[in-house]
Amino acid sequence: MEAALFFLLATSLAATSQAYQSHLLPHSGGGAATSAARHLHHKKISCSSWRLAVETNNTNLTLAGDGKDIWVFDLDETALSELDYYSLPDVAFGAKEYNSTKKEEYQKKGTTPALPAVLELYKELVPLGFKIVFLSASSETNRESRVSNLKKQTSEHGTSSLTYKSKKRTELVEAGYRILGNMGDQWSDISSSNPGNRAFKLPNPMYYVS
Image 1 (cartoon, rainbow, N blue to C red):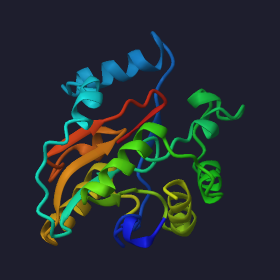
Image 2 (image 1 turned 120 degrees about the horizontal axis):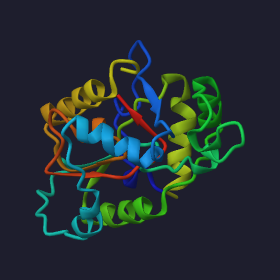
Image 3 (image 1 turned 120 degrees about the vertical axis):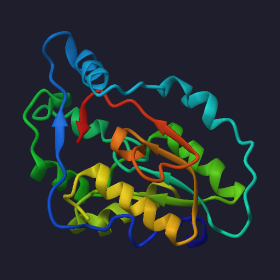
């Protein structure tokens, strides 16, 4: 796909100094989904993921046409689906202990497939005039393979994910961009400062990021 249709800001895959925390959802007491629901209830977060299909088809937006209207996508389990990784026997859909080294080795291969519904949305947004930003807390060491992976699929690492992504969105806004849409599979993707005019939470039954 031509570079003009693939807009990846330099800060999108930037790294900071420490590792963010990824937590497997516990499988006891009713399963991962129940545990996740209890966690969200404890945090007093009301999930509105059911609105995704309706809201993403609501395109009654007026773009300024100055190249500053952007749509932000998280990477893992949003733009890209790592289901093939989680289906590996030694990962077992999150039933086994999380191994960050193994996860990074998988990502370095650059073969992660796109999440079909999100890819379809991406293809609809580009002709409308949106600039697309992929915002990830992935390791800086995997930047090249991850960018290459994204290109194929679309033919400050370590502070908390919430703090990091909020900071990067703020930088985008301060640079004059308008975040009209923001999509991720973690609440940290769409919470805190400058979440966007519309934010969409995708379900992730396997883990949450704090």
